[in-house]
Length: 263
Image 1 (cartoon, rainbow, N blue to C red):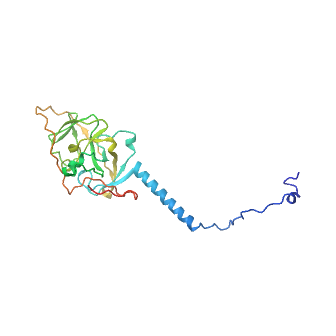
Image 2 (cartoon, helix red, strand yellow):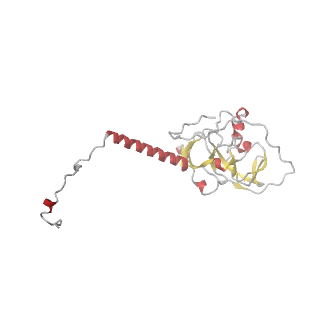
């Protein structure tokens, strides 16, 4: 039997010609026009998937169109809203959160004639009451479990009264820092945790105000008990000024997600 070293092996076993001629290795072949377009489409598709994934699960940019969070957030501020931390821990008092408002908000933020309209845009407010807290607003002070909340970030003391109420489980009472010009939880109650989109953590515009935006309030000593009865609940709807929208639109909405109409 011949081996690879047998000089006669080539005659006994001739080499068959290849069905696929060898390609030149001197110059790289140019892709066909159709293949080039396929690569472009794949690249764009992958970029969109990554962008949507990051926006859906990690973080997104939003801007502020209203004065409801003045002085902390000004009109046209640009923020980063991160969506990861609440997967590992609960929201904390003082967090500035972006959320979808509950259905009850429409009556107060859009007017009683739109009470059955579902608001499709996000709001931004500060977490004040945590699950199980008893929250009250009395004499221009927010009370958490009968202890005054020290808030250096608000525009002015609230000029309304809110009778004591307990925040339900998995819910949060949120208020705007511009207490007297904000359609917030003192009208329509707590926000379910499932409505939370994320936590606003960083302002990247304007350049002279770049930095962290979260401030943590502190609780002081309990106030003396008052002999006066608690004020009656708010029953009449109060509408915020029409010139101050409450929605928090994204800075760059995803191409496949049309921007919803303003309420």
